Image (cartoon, rainbow, N blue to C red; front, side, top):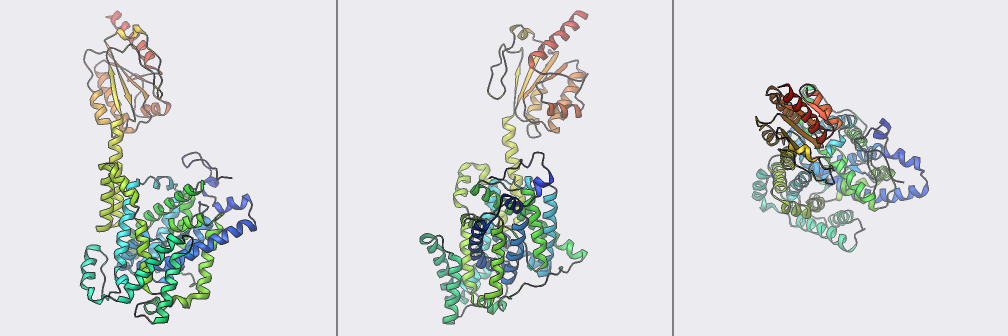
Length: 573
């Protein structure tokens, strides 16, 4: 049975919004058959997440152990409390840029504190029901910043791919490239060979054996070759001393008011990107399964997961599209699969941690190179470029700002440009038609069917009628207001038809109010017709009521009322 709940915008109870999907699954009935399916899916996802979590952590400036802590603790709570049946959480490639910058600026304590603050912000965002609005990020923006992040991720792996020796690697791309080029004489052939072999294994297995864990096989093969042949390459053991075989005890990060204020911008960036990434991943899972996630519950789960992860020394966790899609394709039944994925990763730490010391960094760099290539959604980029200058501009601005400025600037500017583009296009759909005298017949249409007018109603030249069609909002008021403002002195009655106006904001209402005041001073009677109850409520709030304006249901009623008033005025004169 599908997860049938009301839409986010409908009247929802607290339980509708925040009941974790694991409760829904258990209410449906959960037995050995479902547990078996979840166990197989959880094992499959863990095999994918194992090398990826360590690779992302290293690229982010953290240790491979922290990547595993994040996947284990964060992944468990995302599935336990989340609003998606299939979401799998963990460290995400999209965060590499932000995490690395935070570590460089504030140190590891600053990163852990920013993760804790981000978790609190995500939880608050969920309880404030902001999940619905976060999903309104324009498509070109998501494609643009994802492609920009992919470029930065690949650039961050060039050092390990070629085995370069660097005293210091700058974070900014334009500063990084000259430093990498200057160190070209220190290329390690063995590292290049391992990187290329890892990429070849992953890509080759994806074509001939798509269900095999290509990333894990590539990393395991590289580690075996490095150990047996004593290859002169940097490994997890030589750089980090391996990984621990147990989880650390939970503890609060070092904090002070000054430290909190210093890392607050990073925490806000984690919150913004984490909410976007997790809800996009949940939407992908919905599309693959026909289910429907609870966005606000998902944000609360992401928040709790980040708080819990920070207590164990991990960093920011979010729902990940690749692992979630793998979970679905592996036949997962519900959230237990994601929880078991975390358990299997923990078992690896307990049993096989010493083996991780032989994993070469060049192999993990090859894994991230493949991840970066997959992150660039090339067909979507081609479609957006062909769609017109508007989408291409939003895409390009987001992409280049993400690369050469930072991710937050890319998202904010891209969203702003996308909003302006939407406003400009919406304003074009709003038009005003004027009839003086009233036309004989108003043809019916599917959207706003209207009957014919009486012939005698069209004979009065003192009555002018304007019909607005489309949303009357701040983007359209300038053009519509200039038309409505041209009231001829010869007209004694003005009728404005709102039957084809689906939405009115305060700017549009204020424009109509100004027009009504001008007309009232000139002795011109105004009738507002066809306005819905919601639109009338906005009008009344802005002071549009008798004697300033009159309301009727139809234009025909307004014409009849205006004719009576004008006749009475004429007889009195």
